[in-house]
Length: 139
Image (cartoon, rainbow, N blue to C red; front, top):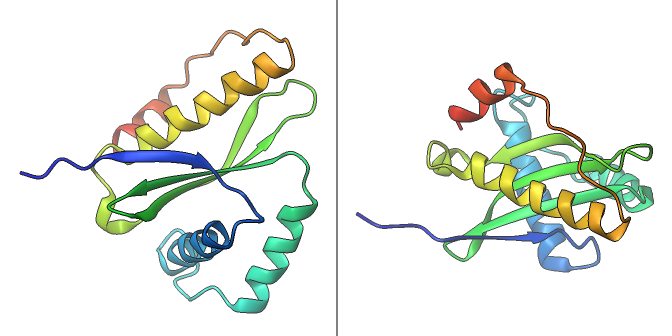
C-alpha cells in the first residue's frame, strides 16, 4: 500500500505553474457532473482569470501530491468578518475518497487563521453545520 503525501500552497496568480494548475483543475471541474460536463474554453478561462486578478479578496489554495496539483479551493475573504468563504472545492476524480477534501479544508483553515492574526482579530465561534460535516465526510 502506498501512502500519499500532500502539501498545500496559496495560489499565486503571477506564477505560470499555478496558472496552469488553476486551468487544469477548473477544467476538471467543468468536465465533471458538478460542472457542465464540457471542457473549459480558453476564452472563458481568460475571463475568469482576469476577474480573479481584480479581486483583492481572492485566495486560492492548491494541493500537490505526486508532483502535480490535484486539488483546489477558490475562496474569497468576507470584508466585514475577514472569514474565508469557499466558492469552489475541486478534487481530481482519481484522488477522491482519500481524505483530500478534509486536507484542503484544513489548509483553508490555516490561511483563515493567518488572516485573522494579520488583522489582530479573534476567530469567531464556529457554528455546527451538520450538512457540511456530512458532505465533507464523503470527500
